[in-house]
Image (tube, rainbow, N blue to C red):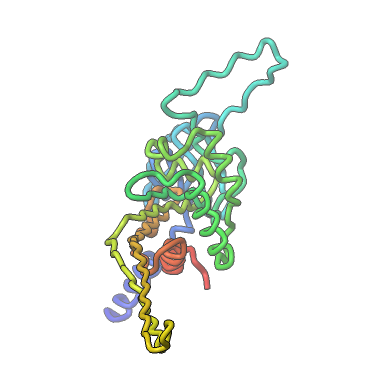
Length: 293
């Protein structure tokens, strides 16, 4: 009898321990906190919520919530950004001007479309000798990373780089202001679950000078009026050039819409020139969790 009770208790504990989070509702707050439990009621301004394994009912304001993933699999977003009033309506209040330091940031995608399994690749930060290589180089590297990942992204939906860059520009996100935005901000702004961010650093290495000398001597015998003279003619040339080597490093980071870092790694390229950073980016992408063979 004791053995039977022991086995029964073990089975019960194991079943409780194995109960998945998917059996509960999950609330993702604007602070990045994730609450797991049961949503009891959705009111006009708040939600009634119980934590997993508890009976106490809490009230959570909708303004503090990004989304709720229900146990059924349905996802509902909150805090939708207010649309601009029609300019043809004279009674409509004028929208407040965004702060010059940072554009107004929506706390969620503009629609209720599920943004799970969607990936956005941001323009790379491209540095040459610690100086900015310009937006063109960063967007070129972004497009090349998109081309590589698009062939190995089974189950994921890649956001087109034109869409990504347009959304960033509309919200004032650029190389100088991006430090003001958290990964959660960027995911919600772009309407994706994952953002890929990378930095390419190209720095001068050692320089070697090489000189090549070329020479030749012609001997012309039995020349001259007497036919017994010898004429010796010498000529030569030299060339020199400097071979400048470069060291290329690529750092790749991937974050999700909860602010968690899924991948962070750096790689030094072995080659030189443009192929150097391309190969380094491919090397890191292949080792990331969003790369599918």
